[in-house]
Each structure stands twice: as C-alpha cells, then as structure tokens.
Image (cartoon, rainbow, N blue to C red; front, side):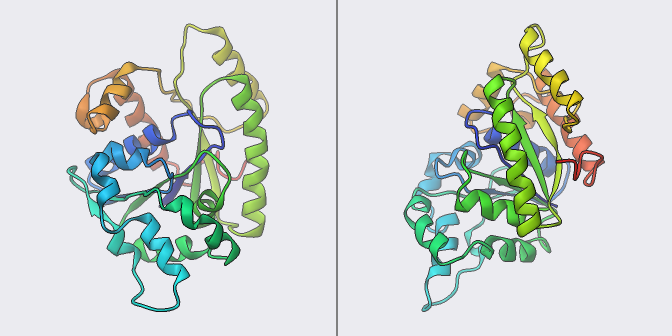
Length: 265
C-alpha cells in the first residue's frame, strides 16, 4: 500500500500523522517506508534527527539523477536508510529539492516517483509519503504514485474552504494521471472537544458527504515532545490517549484499504 498524506494548507499535522502511522505500522511488524518530499525535512528530522541533511544519498539525489543522461543511475533503494525503530525505513528529504524542482517540472519527470515506488512495493509492505504544503511537482508526483490519500484537517474555517479546492485537485489528478487513487478519508487533527466550532465544522462536512474518519486526533503537547525527542508516540508514550487514537486510526486504515470513504471525493 502506497499512501500519501497531503493538504495544501500548512500546520495541519501532515508530518505527525505520516510518521506516527508509519511507526505504528512498523511496530505491528510491517516493513514500512517513509518518503519525505517536504523540503523542510520535518519527517526526516522526526525519525532520524537533524543529521539527515548530511546523509550522502536522499530524495534530492534520487530525483537529481533522473536529470542526468550520463553516469550510473541511482536506484530509489540506494537512498533509503534504516531508522532506530525496527521495520521502519526512511528516504530523507534535502534542501536541494528546491533547487532542482523547476528542471524536473520542465523535463516532465513527474512519473519517476511512481515508477520507483512500484518497484519498492516488492520490499516494503507499507509506504507513507509526506508532502509539501503546496501543490507543486513533489506533491503531484506523490499523488500520481500513491494508491490512496489521507487528508489532515485541523478544524478551522479556512481549512474547510481549502479542502473543497483540494478535492477538485485530487479528482483532476485521478482523471488525468492516476485513476486508481482513492481518497481513504479526512483525518481530523488537533481536535478540541470542548470547543463548539470544531464540532460544528465536522458535522457540516459530514452532511456534505465528505469521508471523515470517526477517530479524531486530540491536540496534545505530548506530540511536540515526541517530535523533539525524535521518537514517535507509540515508542515515546505508548499508553497516552493520543497514541491510542493513532492506533485506532491505523486499525481503521488497515481494515479499509478501499474503504467506503474511497472514491467519494
């Protein structure tokens, strides 16, 4: 399963959801890969620390060699590293992704990630792709390469407005490039049950027919501590309420790779 986590709005929890669902997948015994396509490298830092910038091979190197007609071609597998967590692997980001993006776009390399991940599926049972908070070359590549999409949503009115535009984008990419892409659902993140606005927004979205997972993820300082310690919640605070919510969400995904949420974008 190749799963992309994407929202054009920043600060909605893409990195936290990507890394924690992947960590749970690995903890459950699945060989799991995280691909970090966000130039900021937040998933990379979360899983292996700031030294990710110094690694010799990374996502930028993978894409960069697609621009060269000469020299030995670098396989995606050459850019993957083990993390300290059993069964969990990472293709790290790098700031150079920003430098090569324009040339990748103009030379139509948009399908290279899809081709690479189709090969990697033979080795990794679950692949999670973290994306930039923008519809650019890298997020489009991920949407074209993935089997399914999770959309983090942080319960504010601007996010709801942006969500409708995102649905249209997903449908366009599905029609033009990836007819197999399914929308697994919308993940409500940083939920505050005592506030009235989040509940009202969610009910409105449900009435509109949007596929929302029933398991909401609470707002918690523990997540920030988890990221600062470079230790996903399943390892950092396994009994915490938020960890249990993430486990429940992961179980929902595992039981519905083509859930009723799929294709209702």
